[in-house]
Length: 174
View 1 (cartoon, helix red, strand yellow):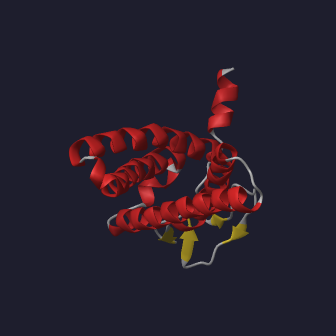
View 2 (cartoon, helix red, strand yellow):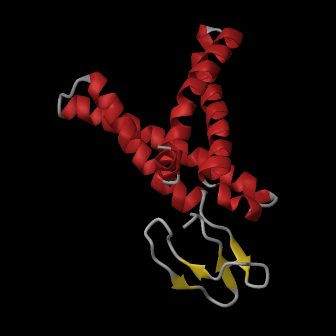
């Protein structure tokens, strides 16, 4: 049973989903906190603050848990750039979830309480793949510094030879 759990937790999308699942109560708790501090009339500001705080926590959880093998290669401004990209990705995923749910309700007459989670599922899939390619992609290293020479998409199981001057560090353990 323990080996099964380890194998399941070695699947990146599962780890990404767990972090996202943790983000929901963090967002709700932060919303409660900010509404208590700011008051109901400032709900839009409280909601935005809760979104930023929960996404900050999700970003670090994803970096340290979902994409932990990249930690040794991230230095300086790379953290800030990744965070900004992560915020933009999360904002676009939230908009996508809203638009999907809205389209399902208004055009296909799907129940609101069915359309909303369907929009969230679509946004989750979008967010995972966009984050993988844009936010949490491998950091390029000089070949003299790098220890890994093959490059490829480990999630897809492919490898190609890297150019001599740059090497990409694998993002998924094999």
